[in-house]
Image (cartoon, rainbow, N blue to C red; front, top):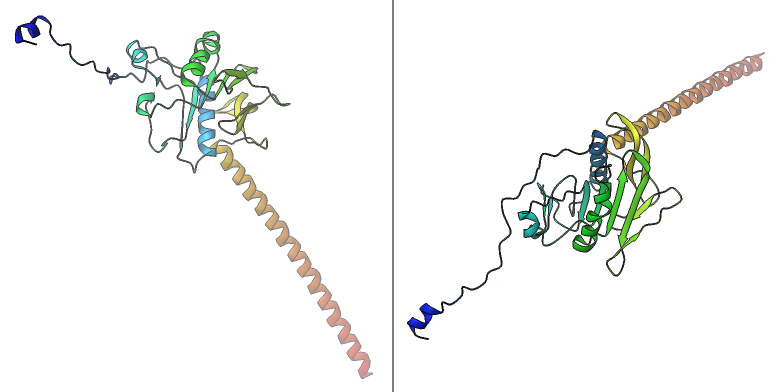
Length: 262
């Protein structure tokens, strides 16, 4: 092609894949619905971190943006689950958010949304569809911290479609991704008494928070101390009884010795 033809029909530049945006926002300034919602979120994160203290192959977070496409990032279509966990990744460093294209295309394996009157419809609709169809999140749960009977959950079937989870006799739902139950627990956390969403192990034992584990260790230490004191007291009593018996035997020997001399 001549230079004149090239000027009339310029060669189109090679098409390049658009690069994901780098000016990501990780905080929109919108707080959680209530203090109870924040406590409920922190309880899930802190208990899982404590249970898996020796592990560095997972990340657990909450109220953090998850970026999954350039279009979503450009449109500022923020998606921030109240609790999520990603397994089989490098969990040795902190993240401000979860950026899928910087994490090898990985998405959360488990998500929990804490319902409120203003979010329940979205959490059970648009978000549920997103987690099923885009994230392919294995286990998805919703729970209203002000309604102990509101726990619902879904798990992906072989066709990668959500199927509702059936509760056990206690009303708990099984997370196959975490290998833990989710169920309610009545008690006080961060100075507020309520029925909280908690993790339970396969045997039905409550997964403790760090402070609960410390209290349990302290109670066990006190019980062991009390047992040691009781054993010491028993040993002293036995020693005193044996000492009294020795004295009586010695006295008897003295009596027998005197009688022999007569």
